[in-house]
Image 1 (tube, rainbow, N blue to C red):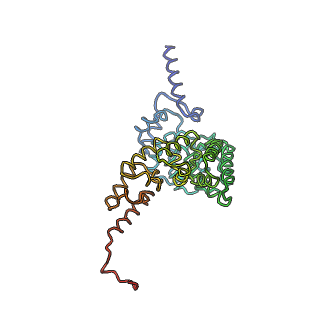
Image 2: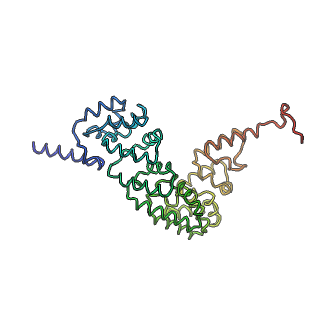
Image 3: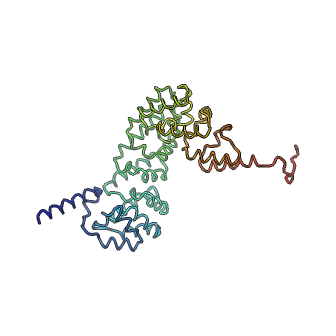
Length: 375
């Protein structure tokens, strides 16, 4: 009997260690499901089987605040279907104490005052909203810091949603990274009047840049300088707004540069010009570039065409093949024409290819149209 009890306790401890740390002190684990939670979720039309399959441990917790969470979301304008989706995907929400939820609501509304927009954020990033109360002070301090930089509230809300770790940690760490970015921008000759806009776009397009060690940025800029990039060219790269300079390291860039130069048969100076036109050559691994080069060359496109329009390397082989087929139907042969028509977003491409079709199909003389005076 003692052995059975010991075994049961061990199994219970193992299950408890799998729980998020912040849930253990205020919630207890039971060997049977909390029927109040299950029934409350059923009443909200939540997919219980999905919860059991992915995060069944939540159903064994007590206390749970399912009704309170649903009421909070409903009070912000969330529909029943939205509430059901949120709780099915992130059932841990029901373990948050109502006071904690209200504090989170007030915190988020300081940067996202419209309930409809906040509900949209919660639906997409529930883990960022239903977070530990132990992070509230750090979140509040980080919000105040980013507001002191005069960043747009929408940008701050996006940062909180997509990179919540950066708001859960001490504000001093974010201050250090932001100062490093600002210093690099200024040292490279960036216009201080434009720095706020540059920083907003950088953080918006790559929120995780804040989580990178500041030293990575310095090392990468030094590496690129050693490769012959001028101060003005480094500023252009830093201003491409994706923060890719912090996503790389000298070893990966060295391999990519060597592969690209060997594949395209160009000089170092030519390669620098290509990278300035298309930073994708720098930040994509050589295995990705190899696949894209292969796709372009197999479509009959020459290496000289690729070098003239390197931005086509930003597109996957599947996208390139689709666009080539569409253009071919319009009578355009990419093997003999410019590759510029392949570029752009899906909307850009559809528009440009449509214009191409109109240009080729429009009659030379329209007998219905009035003649111009010059004619």
